[in-house]
Image 1 (cartoon, rainbow, N blue to C red):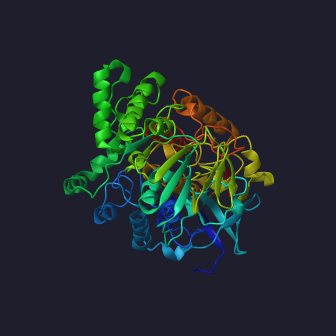
Image 2: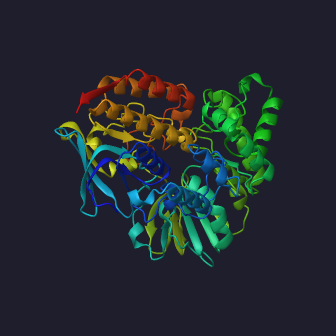
Image 3: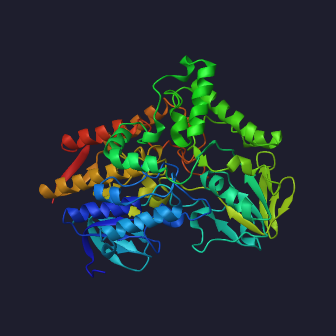
Length: 535
């Protein structure tokens, strides 16, 4: 590892964002160092090793596009890649582009302080290191900080407890055990079928049911792989022009309410059979019109009722309190059918909330459930959680935590007023989690790289968002969100899953192409809405 302590840029995180950011900056001849808390690269796909963990976007689309050679040489084995395969892919990328010499593992950045006299960031790590960088890039991920376990008595439980967001590398053997799974978000929906196939008994504790559609996963169809290889450039371009930046969604350009009931049922059935996020593309108004959305939601509820044998259990699993898609749609393999197993039970926490974790199990208002092990699938402090763990201070020593006390404010999700030369990859105020993250990440990294190159060519010292531009962008993000069904759910998009977190809709739902074009327009106008200072 190089010994110098001054760099052009420091990058925090070695996942999809951090790896590509390092590659781009090195291409520009800049010195950069990546700091990663884990023992390996991979980010989200390093930490999330729980049973059944896999991507919810088709493998070919959820991959880098910056290198045609990389794209051509990597062949995915499944329609939806598993966590181990995604981790192998990211390790391959790190090796192929010789990124490891500039990555320091098992090192957590704990502070980043801006020095106004030098226009540089002073970075501190948990190893006692201090270093300096002109630019600081937060590639910390949007789903990288798990929610705290806040149940009374959790520390008294005598058996093992596991968290889906920090699963042991060696895995967990549930053979012969009775298991409690607390939570029914994406990680629970993916892991419950596999845990239930192994354990003696599984009790699922559900606060809010989630909509999930089938993945219909399997080995990559050789015809699909061949078609992708021949036409990947066109498919990539088409995806970038779609709202979610996902080609497989293939949105049908017709409102649901202009179709007959029979046409709607046929369209939803075709999308259900196709699998994955394509379901939300059945009509063009499902995320903007609640009445249209209700037709899709009721179709899925009917499917749940047809899959789950016990009518009472089916109704508990059928979401009724929020529009479909307003929480991230889950993609599963056999989730609902798992509740037909004799060794699986569902506890509705709206009827009997958890009162405490006891030494022997889980106690609700109705009874105690003795278990041997507990799996916490309780979600993430999304989009801002990782940044909140770092002491980030900008001009005048202002703390980011204080600036964001009422909710995150950014310009384009890329920069923050008062925090010069600090960039965020897929931050709040960008499409981020509301589109294909691989596409969003590449667009952000390219924009940041180009901005840094622009600064260097002009020998400029610092760039930051203006308060006026930031305020206008935040207002725009909220205005667009209010034209959709997204704010109608208590989702992690709004921070509603974290007690005490301000309820602010964080991602930009105006569509990836609109956002990208806006970013390009701002750059073309000499970074309109940004304040620039000389060296």
